Length: 229
Image (tube, rainbow, N blue to C red; front, side):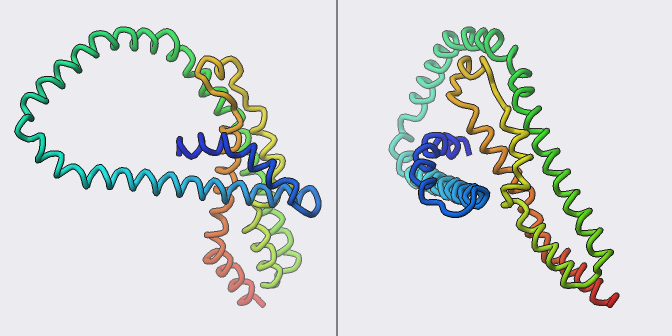
């Protein structure tokens, strides 16, 4: 995931420049299309990174047996030398690393978490409220027009709610103020946009779970109203 995010951080500006001029339709339609393209590219990048990582792991595992056989005769000397080098490195690096951690990292961890969690929590809270409003509309409309066709229509709308750019806009706006301020320079983070984009993707994934729930849930509701009719 970390590697995928780093790739996307470099890829997104070029992708936006390439894709945006080709998107057609109204502003909200173009925004929806762009989000779908971005999510698809992220999934593709993540899949490619995972594939290459697994290939490297398999290559290393395949080389293990032959490598082990070639070094077995010198294993004792190798282990002794490795322990010696490890201890020397630890003596030099550990005090400096502990000092760096204590002075330059630990004091800022709570600030980093606050900077990330506050807008992210507001965004997911807005997602929950949006979903609740949609369910209330579903309940209200089905009470007034309790037919299985009406239920099916509303369930279909809820199932694609994650890709409705206008309704999701308020959720996205809650996350966009995310800023690491001085922490960006301190921790060499070039931009907070990758955190914003990841939070927005997770929001859509949360609502996307509704689509997978739709089949048993929607069928149950439709059959219930069919029975009532």
